[in-house]
Image 1 (tube, rainbow over the protein chains, first blue to last red):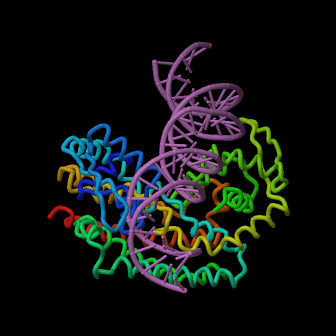
Image 2 (cartoon, rainbow over the protein chains, first blue to last red):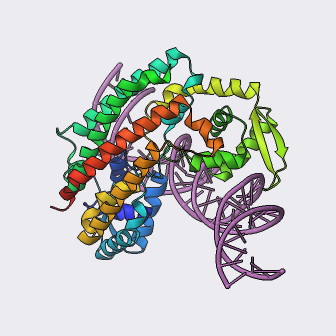
Image 3 (cartoon, rainbow over the protein chains, first blue to last red):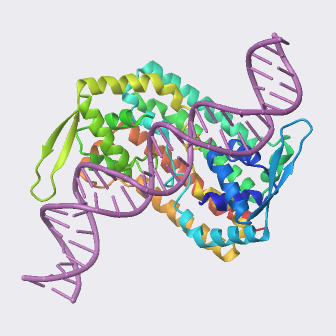
Length: 183
Length: 183
DNA sequence: ATTATCTATATCAGGTTGATATATGTAATC
DNA sequence: GATTACATATATCAACCTGATATAGATAAT
């Protein structure tokens, strides 16, 4: 997905600074997508100079100044148009689609070259990690208000539910079948 | 994972050309990792000049010549050493780890901007796609011999089993919950 | 007072991808 | 038998993105 469409999409959920967009990628979106500062800031500048977003400098009492971007009508129109025209391209992407690079899988692929001891450590920590992630997906307690908008999206609820189910399945499989890597 | 370690690991399963390594990424490894020709060929040249692999030019009767690379003792040692020292780095990567960019998820996230008609099309085709992938993972019939080595690895069986289970879970979830995106 | 950490924007070297170039051989179509 | 399309095979490179780094104001901790 084009970085412009993505930034516009996130700004459609409410006005935000570049730093806050990055926080969304580091936080609730971290398991699904990410962009670096090196992409976010130039994209926002570009969107602004083409009037797809407007920008207000906010002076904050307890923090550095920030530039808050708001999507314009023109920007909303561009985003919707891009989404519609590219939608079918994204069907074959995603979990087990074409964008995945799993270093953990590569490690498993070559696990026969690892000492059994190390393989045990790796699998134990992997299961712990998966369980932590599962808890994250199920967590429904208080979160910073600027991220709450995102969590209330129907689509996020759908995806969090999917992720939880997949994690439960995955953890079960690993616990039941990890011995197969050693025999 | 370093591209050198990865190429050595694949060559440890048997001698191969750069083109054949790419075929592994396009075929059985496509859901887990990939490297482009622009990475594979220079890496192989680099490994060769440092004696981690040896190379034989093969003249073929019915196809263009190819360079077949064989891992050396030195190369095998480097690979094992790299795997061991970096193993713990890869635990938190992978399915729902830090390497995923799911354009399908982004589309779902912004699905409220799509006409219902298009959303239906997208979800129908997604389910079809997932079912095709599931069949691929379950397929156990004849395959080209150069890919058979890979399929006989214990680790591949483990991962294919995991992928199948996850796909079944995922398909079930999507079919049961896709209506939530519309209400 | 100094160190560490968080917020906030910005830039850039280095590395990877996707596209393209080149070449040989096979199969299909005309 | 000529032309088109496609698969095998290697190689290179512009364009793009990331991860690192720089800068800077403010708070908290030691």
